[in-house]
Image (cartoon, rainbow, N blue to C red; front, side, top):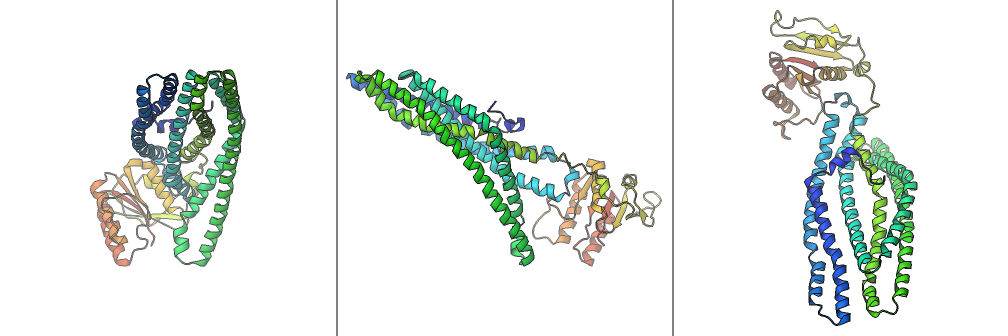
Length: 467
């Protein structure tokens, strides 16, 4: 089946704006197509010397009034695009919420964020524009062809059906090649986007070594993106030429047949000559319509690709436990009331994150230390994954949303405000802090450490220390 679409992509367009937009377009195209009937009636009345006032009034109205629903449809299309983007964002949330195992994988993060912020919305908006154009052309050709077949010559419908059948067969044969070219083009654009996201630091900081590496990689990706997208467009246009030939020849033969058959009838020939431009307009639209139909698989493949790209990564199977160098991590405990909460101990070697989980049910402060690359941050991720909503994870560098966040605050002041907000607004048993003391001077470290001591009286604080 040609018009096949992924389930989630289909859900993307099941909203009132999409239905309203397409319904209004249908009404608008029906009004335009009715002008053919009124034009034929007008010419017949003039040729026969009959009254033609009613025909000319309705004919002019059928040409002028369709612009009103068209303008309304444009408004609906904008709303449709925004709702479609909202649906895509919700799909990302549904697929990735609480998937902390992938959080610190830089490659997966850059790929998915690129899809979410750039390639995804762009692909969705282009698809809606494409669907608008496809719907308009299909309705225009269908309604006008129905009018021509009903009023002038039924063979036009037969010739058109024969042409469409031939094109569909070709589309079926070339479908796989088009899908492969489409996927290559999308991959090239995503790679280029990821490279451009790194432009700020590499271009502005003035490090020639980093700039040259970035520029070389970006140039390669630009060239690859150009080659693959040109290959896709070339493939598409060659098939469009074939579509033009296939659709034009049968209809031209019908024109010759009709004029030969009615060469002795001035009335019928005059009606036919008047609507002959409409026939060639339909042929022109047919070329555009079938070209758009042929691109359906391309747009569908793009949509399926972006949806698959935001799904949980199936081949990301490396257990987090294997990323930790057990035996190179240690923890120590402090508490306000040693006899009732957590007894103070000297640093102990960690052999399993379950050792910390067993202590997480009590208030206090657990400090994890270890050499760089030993898996301290991964340890916190494991704990968060195990405790889920019982724990709050605050990484070193993050874009988490807080009410207290402003650009005027220093790093220390911002962290202080965040910790206070967590204490006041977040109902969790465990607070996980990842190298909160990084990039802080001694004074700020001491002040924030005192605040964390206060937090540890009400919650279990598990921290990774930079110093």
